[in-house]
Image (cartoon, rainbow, N blue to C red; front, side, top):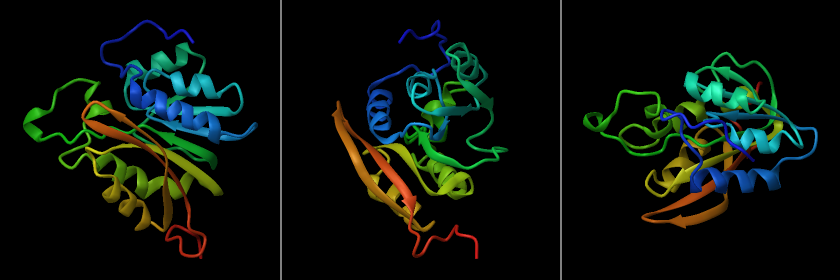
Length: 194
């Protein structure tokens, strides 16, 4: 797959992107409706649109332009804000680097990297809104780093009444990358309508 011209403020595919892509390829079923949150370069969505109907979001205007250049239906928004629909599969490679306030940079790439002081701030916002857009039997794939704390991330989703399992992992330099599958716990999901 040929990526559009490189833009310095768009997160370019790295080991985390490829791990999430390979996992998503095994998870997506033909004809499903899929949302990639924070699409970045658009690589994952472009690969998956061969088998499913893909929508994507990103807050970064340069990333939106990149994804559109790859033929992706992309909406410029913060995470899933304003998205109305139910998706069978939601894919997210969140910003997960723990970033103290004095280390923040002031450009669009910041949105792809800065996970707040704990590395979990954006993941927590995502978890809070996930059930709103996920079908009853839908699932999400989220990439998490050992730098962020895998057990802490799993706890965030469990508190929302969601089941969370590690389905892939890879050691990369000084961290381990994990892909977690998230589904509703239909026996106790806090986000189920009464």
